[in-house]
Image (tube, rainbow, N blue to C red; front, side, top):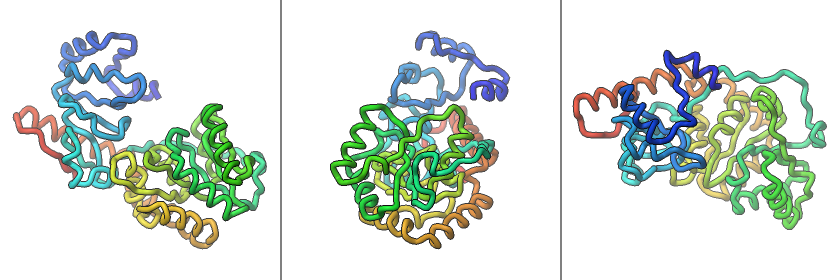
Length: 326
């Protein structure tokens, strides 16, 4: 990825080992116009660079699913699903509304063609495989209990999960066992060395199910890239609406639920209705051709329009305001 980035710019400056003070001074020296923060308050962030104002225009994007609450972040990149207009008051930033979805995708992703079978993971070939490859910290007790109920009601079902760490795996297996679910019905997928093999393995999944209140981002895109349905539970905050935004962008509102009961019922219905599941697979395959979520070029053009608009407003000394890109 770094090699691709280096080849995309006239100049690539690696400041990984520089101090925050030195990075800010360098940014001023080269007259940086716009700085984008991709981490917010997540682990190993360098947010102090933005607090010291490395650029006159500063934007929060993607890595931190919420408002920074900082007067030094001018904008947040979003769409009308993850930040409805009535929620603007909850953000210290002004909103840059991209059309369709704020979520970016790489349309150069490749899927390995190597043969893979459920039996490789000790799953019967005729069984129904649910999948959630989100990190374990996103799995709340409430959602996991719903999953255990679904497994108990559908004996032919198993669930594919990310590998996680030993403690979280132990706790998930313990919780499932206490609810009466056999441990072998939870399959933990070890991390693979490349994305193409990972996507190939995900083809084994019949239906993806999302976490709540922190929804999936990349894993939702991966599921739909593979033409597989994803059941999402939409909440009120940005973090709980990302997968819903992605589904809306493909005209798949029927896969979005708004209550835990609706969420459980929709998953159970698709487990037991193969014809409906097949119809959804075909719909996703068709919609991928006609909607722009997997068109990186169009996304880039919209993002560039936003950057040009906010820069134009800045040089014309206009007051910060929400930006709508059509």
